[in-house]
Length: 316
Image (cartoon, rainbow, N blue to C red):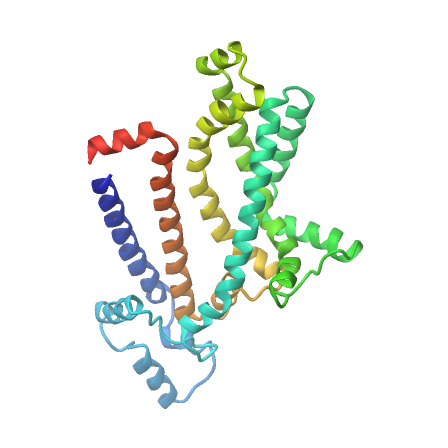
């Protein structure tokens, strides 16, 4: 297990290094002068252009620029935003709580809804199963921005139950404001997790040990809890990595649609005005969050399925 963990951490380090190089190089791959992008297309005096080049080391060779940037990233210095005139780290830190709360809220909805609908479909074959399949199929095919528009139109505009914009103030008010955004963010992934849960549980329901437990008179609820759902958690845990990746991408769409001042909305606005220091920092943090989530999944999976633990232990 220790060898597996070291290999995974080494792989993450290599992934982040390659990603950081590609992310930083994006400003140089874009057509035009990087200084012009950092100035946002505004006309500036030669002295201002020279100051920008000095601040971002644009006159240095590319590898020198990258080395200075990645050295700052390691110490938590992501540079200064060309648009906001603030440290990028401070900009991200101010918006991170909203994004984390939104993802956490959506994650709860995904787990509860996905597991509940998936289990219901697996245990109630027939009309209920077909209804869940149709509903989850529609949910999976619905993009987040379409879900956001529909939810705003129905629950914010027509019914007036929830606000359509803003973060709210205080924990309770924030949860209230984030309900529609979290639902829009979670919808697609509820359908995905429900289908994975249904398939995994149906496979476990056909296992021989489940039939043996039933023949011995074990109550149905115990059979489902101990022998079906527990063994079905393996594939469900595996798909979590895909869900995390989707949430990180969809967050920017949902935050923009609902006017939330989160990291996703910051990324979208920074791309629009070509604020490359912010884009580079947020992109790198998204990759870090994704690979970290997958590492956690890989570590938790053997705890759910001991057979994986033995296999990895033998390879270590």
